[in-house]
Image 1 (cartoon, rainbow, N blue to C red):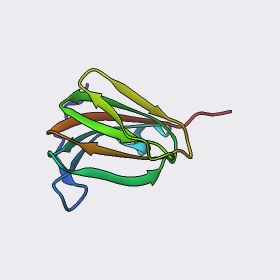
Image 2 (cartoon, one colour):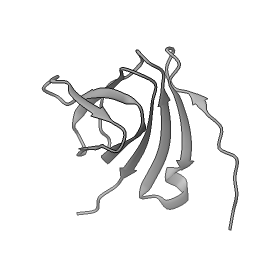
Image 3 (tube, one colour):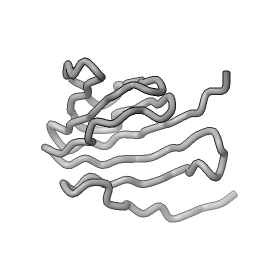
Length: 106
């Protein structure tokens, strides 16, 4: 058993922080992060490098895929993107999300 300290690192200039729970180098197939988004902040549009799931732990916000159509999300909901999907996330109120990225072998 290992118990490790996990510190929050700044991710964007608008106060978004990331806590890496499981790094790629540890398993080679998965990465797990907890991201805290202050109200009004966002994760800039980016392309999913792997299949990924965003689970809303607390708060409320919006997500959008390549079509730029925003959909509301709140605590207890999950959003899944596949590798290559363009997407973005906004926090309408303080929001904490768990992001699991997985390399899927074909």
